[in-house]
Image (cartoon, rainbow, N blue to C red; front, side, top):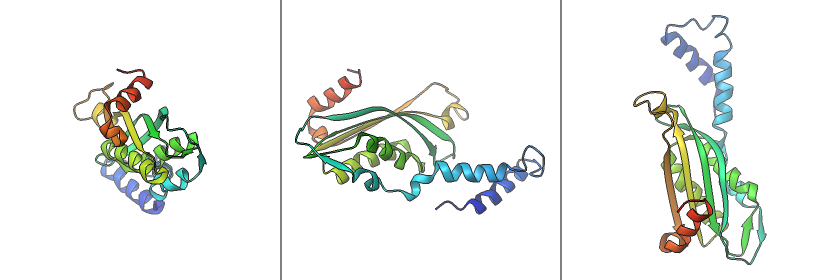
Amino acid sequence: MVDEAKIEKAIRMLLEGMGEDPEREGLVDTPCRVARMYAETLAGMDEKAGDHLSRCFSHESEDMVLERDICFFSTCEHHLMPFFGRAHVAYLPNGKVAGLSKLARTVEVFARRLQMQERMTGQIADALMKELDCRGAMVMLEAEHTCMTMRGVKKPGSSTVTVAKRGAFESSPELENRFYAMLGRK
């Protein structure tokens, strides 16, 4: 649970540490705005993927389900800076399918917390396996990290790609290739 009062106090101290006057007209409401922003962007810390993935429908097909180009925004736990991009989420049903919006909501659960892209990719795949009891899951995230594009090495436009494979995707190059083909990649 985000403690907005503590965040406000910390932001006031941060502004003072930068040599700013927190009572200056343009900054007087900044601590409150930043606290509300963190409460919104870190709302996934109090959510569970199972809350969304529990809404399923019976379906006998074993064909791959892929939701691609799910936009997400997250916060790097190392620098508290945003990273953002697209998630591609696939699974192999095992007698049931999730509502399509539930895949996007699952991405949001893990994106809306302090995060590492590598961990988030695996968390989404693991949640699909656990909550849907599916035969396999594959997740790919493509993201730009402002901690790398705005500071440090300063390489705007670069992206980081992470992949997690579970179940049947781990042992079947054909399934993996079909996943990439459905994304328009070879």
